[in-house]
Image (cartoon, rainbow, N blue to C red; front, side):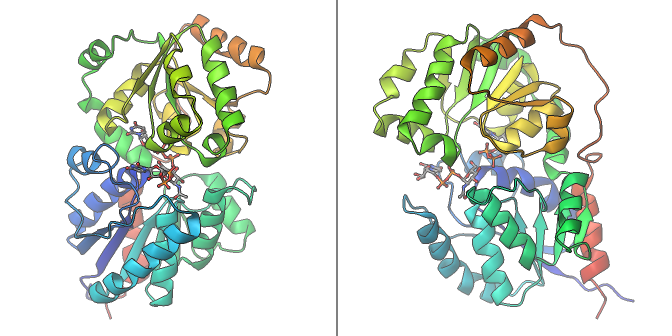
Length: 370
Ligand code: UD1
Ligand code: UDP
């Protein structure tokens, strides 16, 4: 049967999605299919958006919808849908690809579905079981209405089977692992460590941006109290949301006085994986960073009470922050006292070829030659 030249529309809008898009875009390009990129505008600072297109060699989006708002979830999602509908209608792609679990993912999937366009969800199936979590709501809804659900790990695949979505589920492996593997050699660690006055294995890399950890002054104060007790150097590329909230809650001066803490602007992907590969451990509330810590062979102290990557928790790569500050300090001390040893990593997230497998699966299921 002859192959059609299927057209694919990727819809992205925020930092982790650009990182997930990169290998999929490349794999589609290698097959010679027509593809377009629409950027919702959710992340818009150049160090939250443009830098990833440049570093990861992704072409500029065909269209940027410029939806950025300080409003609530409903306003953001609704404005994205309003802007997306005419654009998807005009492109009329054969397939829409959405990534991860953000409001851009939700808006794109809902809009495409109503236009009867098949949806591929990359990074499907992850479940925390906590319906108050905004990312959980987005994932559950998007998985329910998508037509091909590409899972980063087996656990996510099993979740979809439990939800009776097995006909649409496909264990591809994790596209973030693809991106990590194909870029880690590009980092010049020596220059990077010099630039930030850091020593290999002697600092903590921190990220902090979740709604759960930034919407309440008490919660933000608890985190600063922990930082005040840590005796090791910490580098924190600060998400704009967290900076705004620290200023709004009048915590900005206090955090700037934490003596071992170095706050920087958000960094690009190459700097980020360089900082990850050379740190002793991470302290983070990011789903992406906690998983990438494992890719880089470092442990992660996770600052949200959600089981995001069960395999990594079960095997000790991710540990949850305790309510007891002394227990956290003891854990951090124990990491700094251990000799870092290279060990064989379990293949929870595939073999670094997830994007190729996703595109091959799209061909199998959607390119019928009609
Ligand atoms: C969003 C996602 C979250 C994801 C995170 C990745 C939702 C509901 N949340 O959270 O799941 O983990 O992205 O980073 O979709 N801002 C700027 N400049 C920017 C980007 C954001 O100033 O370039 C400001 C926004 O104006 C807003 C705040 O940061 O005030 C939060 O941005 P928003 O996109 O709503 O949520 P994130 O916390 O980034
Ligand atoms: N990241 C980055 N620069 C930073 C912080 C994060 O490049 O200053 C990368 C990080 O390596 C990972 C992705 O952004 O690939 C994770 O994004 P984020 O933490 O914003 O979102 P989440 O994973 O929680 O959805």
